[in-house]
Amino acid sequence: MRIALYGGSFDPPHSGHIGIAMAAVESLHLDRVLMAPVGRQPLKQDQAPSPFEDRMIMVQLACAGHPPLAASAIDAPHLDGRYNYTYDTLERLRETLPAVDELFCLVGADSLRTLRQWHRAAEALMLAQWIVAARPGFTLEALETLLPAGMHVGPPEHGDGWLRMSLTKPPESLAGNSQSGTLWLLPGLCYEVSATELRAALAGDPSEIPRQVLDPQVAAYAREHRLYNHA
Image 1 (cartoon, one colour):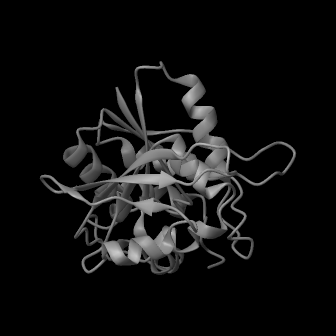
Image 2: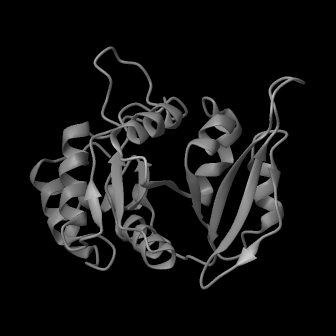
């Protein structure tokens, strides 16, 4: 099977998240995308997300009409309060899958802006094939500047709705060997949805939110549990 991890705050999960996941499914023939709310993000310490349990339920509701998508608790908060790192999550997920399964990691291009600050970023890029969902105008040159220092991107191979490139990680010592990985780029995806604006709308009149932007069941759950009334 071809399985992708798609992590994020998902606070709330909206049409942009679902659109990116389904675009990856259709373009790369994925069998399953695991949408995993993140427990505690080290680079977003100034943000207080909704409780993990509520975000899990909202993701389950958002995935309900899209069979290839499934909510996953693999990135749940640690009992000891440690941060959640993508490297650790991918490593843990790989251990649960049969060796023949292909593992992917799906991210939006915007989230790559902090990639160089991620825990063991270069090594994480080697644990799975990475899929980058990019907005119109995102270039390969921009991608190169976001990768960890020393990583090399090979020439792109063009397909139907995707570009595939090899990634090379330099050896950590002169005696070591370089490692290689694969990066897929899905260009031209445009889902202009602001989670901040959605939270504000959910604190007011959610009936003003088009169902094309937020699943009505997700909106109803958020309102019933007053998740964003403090927004």
